Image (tube, rainbow, N blue to C red; front, side):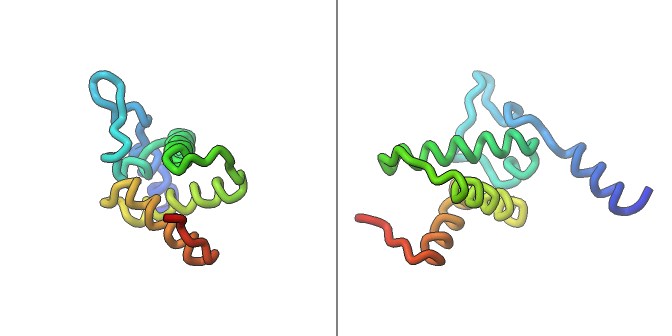
Length: 111
């Protein structure tokens, strides 16, 4: 088996279901989940979780619209950031990615 084959096999074995991070009652503490946990879950669970965070943040901002292309792009950026920063919390990764996006696009936050 080539080195690439070994690496892929090792990554597949490390993936776990998102529910494995839940407490005994089945709840996830979304403010404590780490980038390593996001990066080590299955892609569909990572997509589901980042979509949930998007809804949470939009709810806090009282926004009721979503730009699909931007949302998918930012979701991808959060996952990429998490893969390179496994020790950070997901909410910290979202903060970094969103701040970078706003800076790159000249978007100022309303106070």
